[in-house]
Each structure stands twice: as structure tokens, then as C-alpha cells.
Length: 163
Length: 422
Image (cartoon, rainbow over all chains, first blue to last red; front, side, top):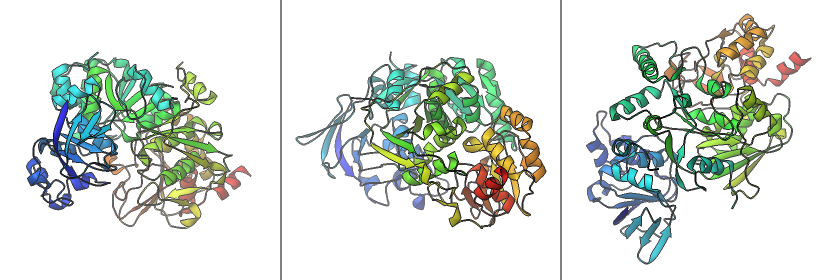
């Protein structure tokens, strides 16, 4: 599974409270409301300018704190094809894959906003210009899972992990 | 390259050598399904129309949070659990059996080398048995029902070495809180803690459950202890013959923390977080209104008995409520046989049924009002956890809780313990 797109760049410790700030959220909200205001605190133009296939690249502890699966769903629904970060909040990491959003832990220091990057989950490689950044590749089961849209859709389609 | 205990357990269950950072699909030995997250797992499982392929012996539903049911929605959830389990021949530990994590460790559901998951933050308690145990979401539980497997990213390991002798009046809870302070509430994010060191052998299995229980309160995914004779004796006692898993001498750790337990004193975690830990003298004298010994952290026999020893022949301070919940029917029996229950009752404490009780407000038990202060043997002290956000929750050992209940103020237990021993 390969993704190619433009980079939106965030820093360290972007918590799920920034993904989905309660500041802008009406009490009765839909997924559309959450999408419109995603990351508004740190990048007011993110939601309006992100295009299908684009990537989010961050530093340490992306998606810290909460177990809110919406934080991953919003990124997927905005068309983000993959997230690259140096480390993750563990709930966000699991929720992302369970919701069908590929997340990769790798060194992101060399990646800048607006870069065109290519990610190969199977090979465990990110390409930025002439640079190659390696990461632990996705096993076949997880590739199928993110393609299917997450853990439960994957099991509905496949029934079980491949032998 | 050598492996940590967690890397070995994930490798054995994935059928492939795995190191920190690797993504694996692993066989699950045990799934704990409770009444807080279990019902949603049942809903997801049913809605997806998945087949149930997990060996039914590898799971239990344990009804411990919302008991006795105080609202129809919880009663309905319990009906859902009993129906679902009944259809598939799954075991249910129903209301009053005890707190899920005590039941799992005491009934031999998990043993050394196992990989367990469950729908509760403190599943990591089973790590004291030399197992890897990880908290999961309801959809993940549903997926394990369907496949017997789950995907994981193998965590990096932080090694924790306990060294030195344990001073009088210092208990496993003090060690767990001291470690929480050292690491911080999120300092071990997505890591496994691996506990060992010369002091581990001096900590009872019950104490080890207390320490492993609080791994998650440092942000860790799991905490796993080295096995020794005590571990294997416990495992044999609950009918298990598993081989223990030791780390390789050249295992790679992200870092090593050495905790000299001989330097510890009784401590409390003050609000608002579990790592806000200070010597008890810093808070001694603050009035308390509610005291609680129980929970998956500290509601085992030695916890009930130390509390009983302290209160025996004494009376609670005026204006203090003291609740005690032995965390299983067996522990209740043993505490009754030893006279602990009588001593607690005589002192004015209220012995509650084996259940989660006044640990968290969602259980509908023993919530507190604005301006009240709680001293509890539980594992979390976030404002509002036990009702009013204007109440203060302090965490301490069962001895500290009992001494504070007698004095009516946050109290160092060592003086009362010395009197009891004299």
C-alpha cells in the first residue's frame, strides 16, 4: 500500500484536544462540525486546504491523552492518507489503525510543510526527495485492515486474519 | 540481540521473533470482559455479524462496576451480558463475585508467559504474574471474540529495578506511588515496564499486584514482573503450570530506573494526578471525611488485614465514614475467618460487598460532595472521579487510609502500627 501527497506539518505534543478542540464545538455536533474545526487552534486553514491524499507529519506524542476514536476518524474523513510522527499517544495510535487510518512511527525531522512525500507501508519506507526514511513495515494483515477501513470492516470482509 | 520479557511474550504469541516497534498479530490467551465496556463489545460483535471463534474457556464476563445495579440501563447491560454469555456457554462472574482483576489473578485465569487483554484500564495488574496484559477498546474485544487474535505494536521496555530493604510502615502502594512520581503520569507512554531487582523478592504477590496495577497510571501499555519462587507458588496454587519468561541478559531497554525502596517513607498522591506524590508529613493533619480500602489496587486479604489491625480496639474519628470492600468472596471469607471483618465493624467501618464500589463515581457508590476530602487505597485521584469536582482525593496505602480514618486526619500509619505491634 503506497500513499503520495503533500505534507501538513505539526510539532510535538499535539493532543486530541487540538485535533478536536471543544472550544469550537457546538454541544450537538456532527462529524462535519468536527472536520471543519480540526486542528483549528494550530492551523486555522488546515480543514479547508487539506486535499485527499495529503499527509499529516508531526513530532513526538501525536494524539496524546484521550481515547476518542473521532480524532482518527476526522483525519480519515478529511482525506488524510497517512500520518507520520516520531511517537504517538498509544490510544490514538491503536484507534487510527482500528479506524482505517495508516499511522507510521519514524524520524520526521527532515520533513517540511509542503514537501511531497511517498510512503510505502509494505516496504517500510518514506521517500522525501532523495531521502529515504525507514520504519517497521506493516504486516499483510494490517495492510488489509487499513485498506478495508479498519478492524471491524476488515473482519466483516475477511472473517479472520490471514494464516 | 536479546529480548525483554514483553518482546519474548509477543514473539511467542505471534509465532515470529519480534522486537520493539514491530507490528504483529498475536494469539490471545485470555480476554477479560467487564460490565463497563463488555456490553458495547457485545453490541459491536452482534452488529457486525461476526462468528464467535474464541475458545470459550479463554474469557469471562465479570460484573463488578454497576452492582447492585442502581439504574435500569445498567440492569439492561447486565441482562445483555448474561444472555450473550448464555448463548455461547461463556462464564459469568455475576454481581458480588468480586472485582474483575482480583478474580482473574485469584482464579487462575492468567499465568506466567500469557498474553491477556481486557476492557478495563487496570488489566495490567496481571503483569505481576509475569504476563503481558493490555487494556483494549470494545471493538477490539469484539474482534478477539471473532478471531482469538489481536494486532499489537510491540512496545519499548523501561526496566525498573527495586533495590534495598523495605522499611516498616512502607507498603507496596507507597512503592507504586513513588514509582508513579518518578515516571510521571504519561512518562511511560506506549512503553512496557519490566520490574525486577533484589527488593522484588521481599514484596508479597498481593503487593506485586498493587504495583503492576498502577503501571497504566504512568501511561504504560503494560507492566510485567520477573517471576520468582513466589510467582510460581502463586501460579501453582491457582492450578497453573506455566513456564516463566525471563529477559535476556543483553535485552535492550529504553532506560533503566533504579528505585531504592529503603529510602522510602509512607506517601500520598495529592490531587489532581497520581504522580503528585509527597511524603505523608507534607499533608499530615488535613481533615478527611471519607476513607476507603478496596479496589483492584488494594483490596486483597493483606490490605483488609492491615486495616483491621490498625482499627482493632479503636473507633473511627467523629465525622469520618470508612468503607472497606474485600475484592472477592474468598477474600471476604478469609477476612471474616481471621476476625478482620469483626474488628472493622466494631471500629465503625462499613464493610461493603466485593465490587468496585467507591472507587469511581460511575459505580454510583459512595460519591462525595463539595468540600469533602477522601483518603483511598484506589489508583486514581482526578478531580471529579468520586463525585464533586470540589472534593479532594488523596491516594495512600491501606495502612495510611485506616490510620487516617481513626485520626480523622491524614495520618502517618507508622505510629499506630508501632502501637499495634508493641
